[in-house]
Length: 256
Image (cartoon, rainbow, N blue to C red; front, top):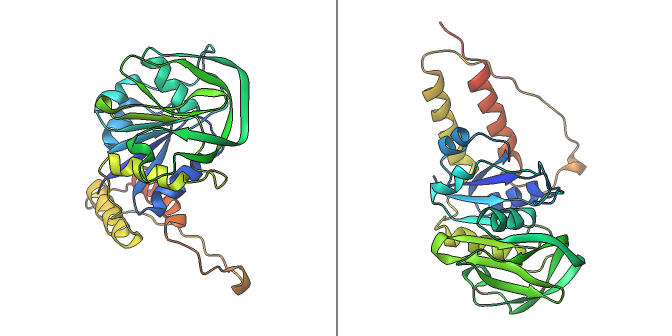
């Protein structure tokens, strides 16, 4: 089973990214930017997405992860703060711009795998004042806007892609398609479903616990019929299920 790792830099919409990835039947987890390299390497992701955040990459003590993660050699997508972070650690320049962009903004895209099958112009959702002033060597501009010369960039050789806008929000046209294209770049097919997720999780528990015992805790809640929605999807609960089983495995190993 191929997996996506989402690094949370403190953005408000990180769970929306995870929701869309799971909606595409791809398994993913969200780790804090503070996560140890060893934890990330053990997770062994097939692609990494860096979320947005509220800080500026050029400020002292701004969020910064262990850069050894990028030696894993998997495709990476940076969003907003994640875009700035990728640019800076690779030798680019990020500074406060003279004009910020907030809300729906017309985007002009160039030929890029990230925008394959998408109109050359569409409205995206911007929320930034900082911007990439100079690209790292080997990187090229993939999209622009009226007030942002680098609204998206890429480095095909290293499979690094980044966007200034937020494709995960409903206000962004073609946002899901962009994330879907990134999954295709990473050669990740949507073959994860709640059914096989349960089987995989059960096997993981057995491997961790062995012949020991696990105490399972469940919460029962009555939901009135009028609160139920036919659109309820399994990916909406999968994260909670995984969190519960992981905690049980790590915290409640019992010897005979």
